[in-house]
Amino acid sequence: MSDTQRDIQRDIVSAGFSLALIALTAFVMQRFFLPLVWAGILCVATWPLYLRMRAALGHRPIVAAALLTLASACIFIIPVLLGLAQAAHEMPVLANFIVNANMNGLPVPAWTANIPLAGSAISDWWQATLSQPHGLGHLLAGGAVGGFHSARDILRVFGTDVFHRLVDFGLAFLCLFFFYKDGEALTRQITALGSHFLRPERWGRYAQKVPTAIRATVNGLVLVGLAEGALIGVAYVITDLPSPVLWAFATGILAIIPFGAPLVYLCAAALLLVQGSVGGAIGVAVWGTVVLFVADHFVRPGMIGNATRLPFLAVLFGILGGVETLGLVGLFIGPVVMVLFVTLWYEANVFDLEPAAVQKTPASPAAPERTQ
Image (cartoon, rainbow, N blue to C red; front, side, top):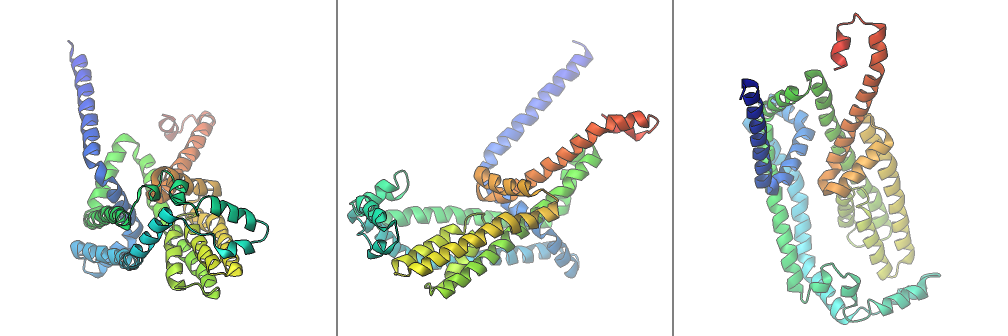
């Protein structure tokens, strides 16, 4: 066997070993993938703030990383704790209501007869489904309600899910601290690795796009979501909805997810309807839909698109497609993917035009390198 063949065989074995090691690492680390991604998103979004804080503290990276991680955790933890406290207070009552409604059925409310045009049809449907024993479970077949026989079952599943989310929550902020502390070294290593596989100028072009896309997406989603909660909260106050501030807060949190706000304001409208306020329910539903349509189709894509220079459809499809395929974290990954794709698109169009330029300027030393 010649030396060339040995080198080729060695390269193949080395590549196979590297791929196997990467696959094994991914398999071992798959449980912690989501916290790592969340920590990376938060680190990139708040990195300029970390640099300013580190400079203000006399370039002490550990202190700055600890303080900013603690501040970020408080921003998230305090609202979550308030929400969990409220949920813990209301959950037993809600669980008993769901179980009793599933076991005994729900009587047809009197207000359904006052609904124009569709009142009789809604009453008939309610009588045939929700008013029957186990009707709620059959309606939600494949969901959780049909398999629950007591409030304890609901509380046990709910508590287990909350525990897993809290573990991911803690791991994300633990990773965030180390990303702050070692962020510059990690950036240099990623840059060296990317420049090894791509030309340095091309890697730099892509690497500059990612932080901008993440920061623009975080700002667009969070700020617009909170604004939606405030605007829809005005309708809650006007219609005398019980605990309008709590409803507005829940709307703002879920509004960070595109089309997540309807889960709250439609429930608020249903509560108003049950209380007999038909006009208030219609007003909340209509106003919430208008705010949601304008924010999710114009304001949010505009904020993200202006910073990332993405077309409107690319921003919209990036957000919605990311949520559809990756869940909540896809809100931030989707626009980044679209930014990189659009960069590749423009890069490919430039390359398509280069042969003509090369023919016009054959003596240019840069032209042969760019056509490789």
